[in-house]
Length: 74
Image (cartoon, rainbow, N blue to C red; front, side):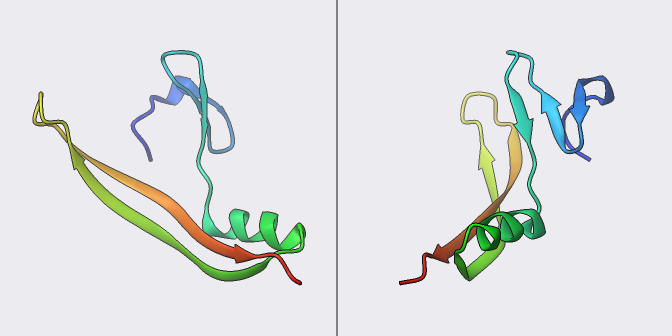
C-alpha cells in the first residue's frame, strides 16, 4: 500500500517511521466524519496528488493528501 514495510505497521492505517514518529493515513470518509461530527459543514473535500522530485538525488515521489474546506455554522 505505502512505502512502509509490513513490520512497521502499528495499527489500522498507522505506521511507525524510522525516527520513532507515527504516521496515520486518513481517507476522505474519516475526515468528513470527524468534521461533520464536530459541527462543521463540508464545502470541499478531495484527494490532492503532488509529484515532488529530490533535486540532489533525482528521486521522484508521489504524495497524496486529503484537502478539505469546512465551515463552522453561524
